[in-house]
Image 1 (cartoon, one colour):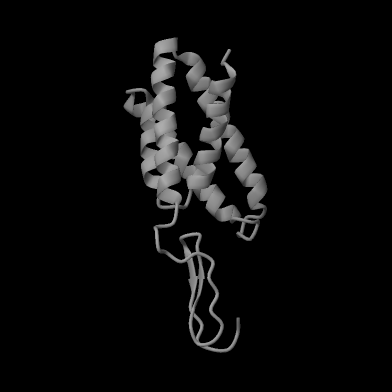
Image 2: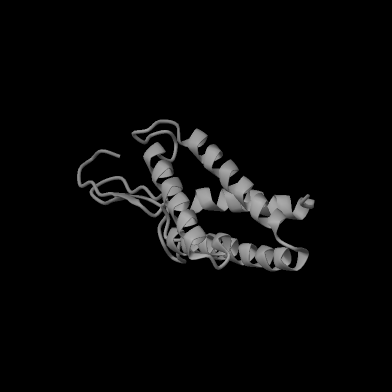
Amino acid sequence: MLDEAMVALAASVGSGVVQAAGTDAWLALRNRLARLFGRGDRQRESVQLERLDRTAAELTAAGRDGDGPQGDGAEERARHGAAWRTRTEDLLEQLDPNERATAAAELRALLDEAAEAARPAAGGFTRNVFLGPTAVQSGDGNVQVNRFDSRP
């Protein structure tokens, strides 16, 4: 049985996977998380990479706010977050206390790095709207619309 701190960490991993999918932080998180879950076994690591890729593809298809071709983004995010939380709890429960502490430290570092990579760069533009013949930008890192007419 995991203590509250480990359960909270597992929940953070689930949320972190969902939040990182489709961002610049995804590739690093994906590779390191698969390596951690694989625990030195290339075949297990490959299975985790496939799961992570499937997660990213399904979240992308669902869209951020249900605007994707596959429907409700919030429902998909919750489902995948819960799945990765459970996988993380299972992993942590299998480890002896010393291995668990090491894995927990690595997971915390990985989440911190992913959060840092997801932050906009200093001086960058986020969610700015300039009316007139300029540009409209969205700060989620993957949408930019330039219009040179009078529409907002």
